[in-house]
Image (cartoon, rainbow, N blue to C red):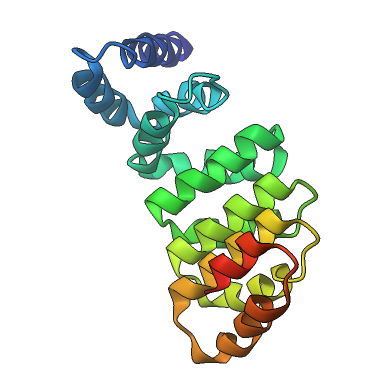
Length: 182
């Protein structure tokens, strides 16, 4: 049976390469989604791309494969920070609630790019258990994390968060953070 799985992963790589061709893109994307779990390892590898024009496409495809969630959750905790951030962005697209614990952990991480993308994903998912950690993220030393926390908290429209966001709006030294709080 290993030969069959290997064949499907080879097919996934072939389809991923076809995504660069505009005339084949839609069909290749549909076929990757149909491959499902067999396409996930190759798509996760593709998240490392330097071709940013294809990145949203890879993320959209992964978001439409429900069986991709466990591999994306694992990537959130173990992969290179670039892939971790892109995995968080993928969860912002899929809004998969099973990713919330891993996203909360990523929010507490050391790489501000991963933390900010995790914050935005938590806001998109609408996980209310993220409100307190997001309020804590308003105090992060990195402006990008504070901006993402403001935007995520804004998506909840929770009156209990307004005072904290108002404090950021009035007191943050970075104008970009104050704009996000507004």
